[in-house]
Amino acid sequence: MTIKEEAMEVLIKKAKAIFPSIDESTLGEDTNFEEDLHCKSIHIVQFSAALEDEFDIEVPYMEFKKKVTFGEAADFIAEELGE
Amino acid sequence: MTLIEQLIEKAKAAPKRVALPECEAENTLLAARRVLDEGIGVPVLVNDPALIKETAEKAGVSLEGMEIVDINDEEKREEVASRYDSYEKSQLSSKGSRRKMKSNPMMYAMILEAVGDVDCTFCGHTNTTGDVLLAALQVIGLQDGVDVASIFALTEIPGFEGPEGNQIVLADCGLNPEPTASELASIAIASCDNTKALMGWEPRCAFLSFSTCGSGAGESVDKVVEAIRIAKERRPDLKIDGEFQLDTAIKPAVAAKKVKRESDVAGKANILIFPDLNAANIGIKMVQLFAGGAGYGHTLNGFAKPVADSSRGATVEEIVGDIALVILAAANM
Image (cartoon, rainbow over all chains, first blue to last red; front, side, top):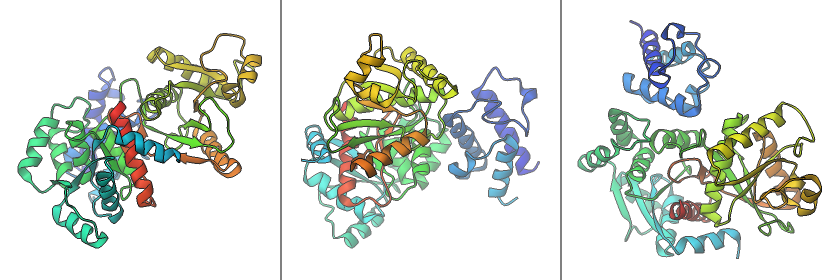
């Protein structure tokens, strides 16, 4: 499994934890934090904390919060880890 | 006596414990010395003792009487982390909080605040606003009924005769470019609570617009009206009203003419909530440039416990003022 795929798994798992009523089948690389999930800053913090725990890294928050979709966020983590 | 000097005197009446993690900065230690010597508060230096000693020597500051929390002390770190595990607003896992404490003195300081070992945290002199916000969101969490953090400016405007003399609070002056209605409501609620804590005023909060009570129409007016509804629903105890033009909010004669209903706020607002950051930024700069006013306020709005986000260019004098403000917030929150 690539880092991007692992990051996608973390994001989807976290989305289900934050928004329990969400239909998992609708979540994927195109999932938009703001438009699809109506994420507030506290939710973005929760996603970044989950990724930090999984990969044992520090996620630069100001860069991370600019990512619009799950795919962009997962790509960012992969880049941070040099993939 | 300037406004900040007045607030420093108020802070001395109830000195609190303030965590100072940015001990690599000489100004932090110079300010800490003044805070301790003048009885404004009790500084708690949170960092590597060797670094603190080195900075103190460079700055020519005596560390006598200063409390130091050694971030390298594993036993202490684990003891604090285990108490923090039950902090309900934490956004960090048990593993995450321990990792952060090891690598990030600012987060260690905020964790000390969350568990009650200190009353407030001063940072932002070496860390960026983004770093401070992230740490506070992850470690301290937002206060109930609030969606976003924000920053208010306590302004002092020569010649202005408003409901609180020449002082008035403006928000959000720094963090939310295009707040939603819910976020705007959060900004108002947090500004009311913070104003009461810092200034002791009874908050009277006006939502500003180009429209007064439906005199204008448009999406931005709709957003403000919805924000007022949300804010009143969340906090019926607060005096919140609008939408008002600026003159309606602060001038009793204009309010009497334009607001044909009972209002606790119209004509006597002491807190002004701008509809977005464009308006707020332009507003505060007009106050400064056209009216010679001054804006203070680096205590972040909306967090469950007080955190100061100072400026990287702050002088020792300004840092002492910022510490006094966050101590006052801690004393009255």
